[in-house]
Length: 258
Image 1 (cartoon, rainbow, N blue to C red):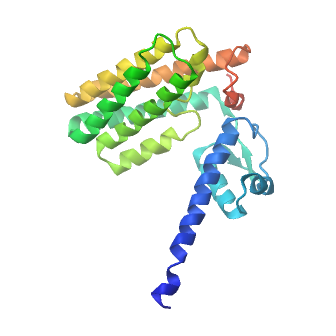
Image 2 (cartoon, helix red, strand yellow; image 1 turned 135 degrees about the vertical axis):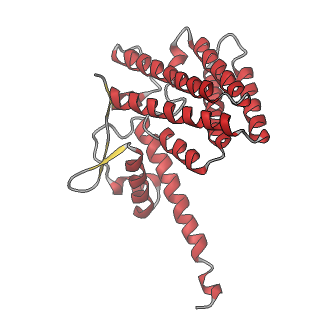
Image 3 (cartoon, rainbow, N blue to C red; image 1 turned 180 degrees about the horizontal axis):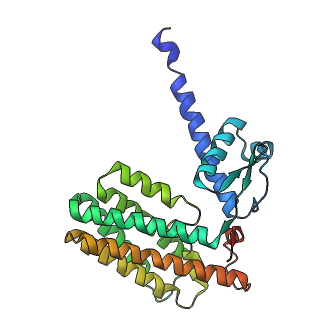
């Protein structure tokens, strides 16, 4: 076969991959937004009509979300939305804290590319600016969430290891384990900004430990940092159980207390 005859294959493959990724992101949003309730069987044909893509990218997206833990395979075939115990979510957050602690220690011991450190400092400066007002509105919280996610991504780059960075990305995709999974619950708390200021101080202390090559200190800071997420989880579940939880977190219905 002439090489020219094979040329269209790559763009077609890329288009298929792009559709699968888009379907995966949209399906994740639907689950976490409560559009697909816990325990509900997922109908492929309904998703095809709703998302406007073929069954092939839908199936690829369903398989990926099953690997992430948001869906479960049913004995007779197909998928359903998973529900989680409070212990499941607590363990996922603890696992993230453990891996991020390891990444922080390795980054401190091995040294970090100055360009990555500069990016991290710029990110923290942007967070400082976001937290400067005495109170935060929804836009401020959203900006914090984006910057916080970026800082945690930079931690993976600081290690200089594709293996560690890949596993960090994997654990952050576990249900409710991302660094900002429960930050939005704080918008309804009078201590909202104070809690984020504490988290930001830990960010600063972490970067200082890494720059001074204090591996044990860096690891301990990241483990403590994950405990803030545990605290936010408990606050979110407590508020949800008493009817005082935020209306913008319907995903809490997927978590079983006790």
